[in-house]
Length: 195
Image (cartoon, rainbow, N blue to C red; front, side, top):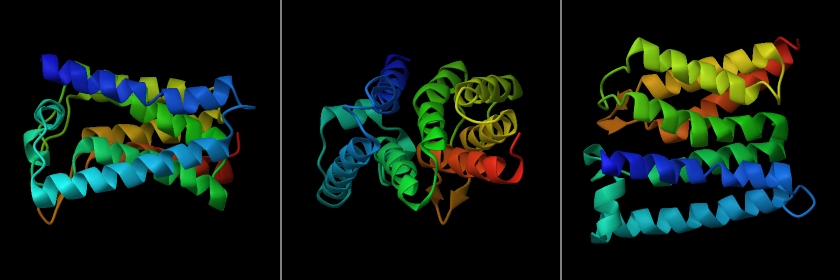
């Protein structure tokens, strides 16, 4: 349980990225957010390459990775990839008002859901945990997008959190799927249902 709480606390620290953009937009522009996440992305790709190919075995990996991540890219790396994809998508038209709540859904919604009830890689979470995830994510999006877009983002984040499909023996990690699917759903919601 202590390792699970530590994982969730590390998760929550990611909220500093969109929060710094919101609190200090003159100092932390979106370009700064993109650059920071690009540097983080290069760093985690290098660390994961070394861990998976050479066998870097730091104690922190034992505490912060799950069993199914031992031979696959770890959740922390996919967290950065998901955040970087959403931040980078702003360059092709994704509004920052969509990117920010998608990041919060990963940084805040996912750890809350994880503490309430984790599912094995191949299972679906309990219904009440999914309802909490939906509520938290919808509330996180509400100040930034229309109600319809917030609900669509909440549904997408909940789906990504609750169902972890395995493709070719690899678990599609929610750390990647939550921000990407939530951002896509909210963006579609803004375009298709602008109220």
